[in-house]
Length: 286
Length: 279
Figure (cartoon, rainbow over the protein chains, first blue to last red):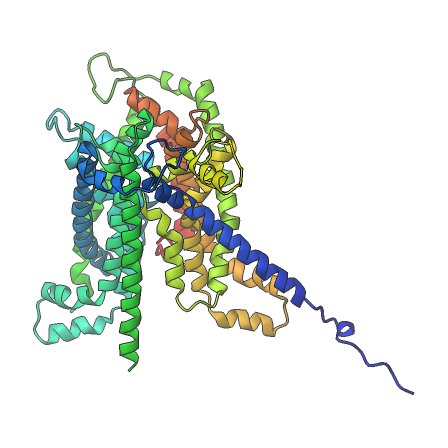
């Protein structure tokens, strides 16, 4: 007597391969759609930057005149320079200060360190509007002594305030990876602590410093709400100026051209740094 | 040499944080109880509780309702879509995941207001995209600018990267052998996800939710541009009262937002003591 052979299904095997295929196709479509939606505004900005008509709803013909206009427009050039000035200064200050602060935090005992990290998270998590309002309130107390403090000085302080935590948080994990023995080795060889810090620890964590610097600059350039509350005396950065222009319905397409240039610049520099990294890896392997 | 040599390097930062993060709260707290214009204090300034009457004003209640509605909806949609994207990148076989991630956050590098304005332009019935498409024979027109949907879409796509990044960081930290172990023990893919991967990445979801919820609740540019002034949120109210120099109004609302933020700080300090997923 022969028994029928049990099939896989009878053992409880369920064939999901078809379902998996459907899922994989659907998920690819969804991811593509989300990425498309993220890029849609960038695409519109690109199209508008090469549109010769000032009417935002009609595409007339291809032009590059708005790219020339960036340098000719009387206020746009100023606000771009203001933005770059504030962001550049804020980034330099918070990168240098943030690195040393991170070294300090790393040297604290665990309890104290965690408490300081908690405080450090405040500017990061705090709603921009509360940070902006808060800094504005602190410095308006100083107004009777320094009547012209709003504008560049307070804007710079505010930008340093909210970019510092990014540098600190980028450097800290790299500091933890540094072998504590190398500092002892430096001391054995007769190097003073602070010289050892600059010559040994800083180079060891330079990847963290660099990514913190990039983050700080990005956040600073793109900031609107905190700048809106802390500026004054006619000192506008790009975001505040764009906000004003949108309100007045007088946004020049030159801004779109500037934004497109910036996006292209970031994309190209990213691709280059990526290619360089790959090259570096290959060399290391050999 | 002891690394404790450097511990005083963090002391100035503590002072700095106290001056710029704690002192403002004290000032706001004081402003809640006095009625002044700006922060000038003179003889007429007196202690009052009448400021709190603004909390029952119609505009405040509407602003609170809108802020929470949009904040919660944005966060939920971002969790679902953001988790999905982060998970797909984590599971993908591309050699350079860092590059994909950067491409995903690249739109963040261009100005937020400009992106919102561009998005607003194509939400109008006559726009540049429909103009270009009509030339090749496709006629579509949408007219959603000024609606709830427009604001929601603007918030979701503006803050989505803030959700994707922490979730991806959390996923990346999962030891792949844990997943293999789960499969060896005979669970299905779906159960493996719910019982192993999802709990291990929940840290990222919490961080991401806070990073999305707070700004979408308190921002004022997106509802103003995409809502055409129809949708009034907490941020709009604070900004309006700031322009009118009624700082006490902003102070009360800011304190309420601050309580929410303190709550999130507590959550963050519980789940992520060293703030590893915040970047």
